[in-house]
Image 1 (cartoon, helix red, strand yellow):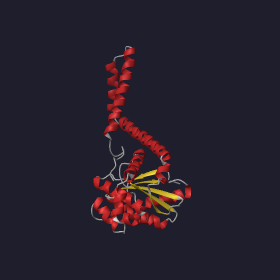
Image 2 (cartoon, rainbow, N blue to C red):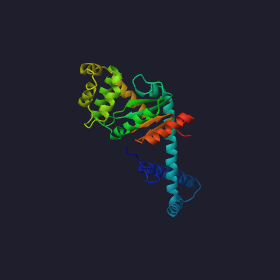
Image 3 (tube, one colour):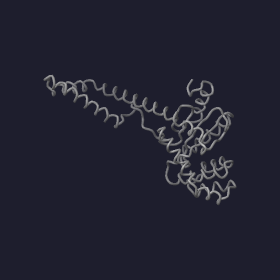
Image 4 (tube, rainbow, N blue to C red):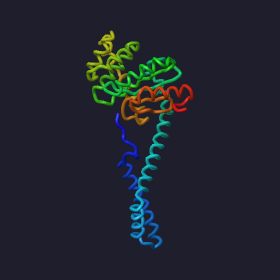
Length: 262
């Protein structure tokens, strides 16, 4: 999963444009005030320009501060979204649950059947289930990699509707399969578990798949998710295939401290 690097490594053009716009606004205000006091506007602009040229680190400091404030605002909005969406995020009737359905700790994973990182992360999920008998893992179908992913998710919703006891077997077979996930490969994976294809096709004729996927898109949008895999542990959103150790640390912290960091 690819992310924009932080300002300590790369200047973000949109932020720079906002900074320049804000600087221009400040200059305009100063100039306006200067005009009211019969002070030469050109002189004020010249002084500001010379100061910035002589102290360019001020721009870097301003960009760093802007980045900090934006991240703080994003995190605040994400926490609010987690609070507002908690019921549908953790207890939706449409979601799939692996591990212990009555577990006291919950890990939510947003995934796509065509996501290579999700395929690798599947082993992390299996190890977590084995290591934590009290862990509930909620899977959210989040098809973001094209039409094939959407088709695979539609079949997956049908599997969960027709034979929820077969979902884990189907999920692993399709996710770890070598071919691209789409309607055909998903149906093949489902029927290989013993589910009748006509039952799946009938389930796919309903609105359940569309409503399930739309529900997940809505939550993902509120949480600011842009790719897969993405996780929710407690009140923290974790983006990317961070690996078993990081997920284990957060689960241990939740278990011992009630938060993802002790």
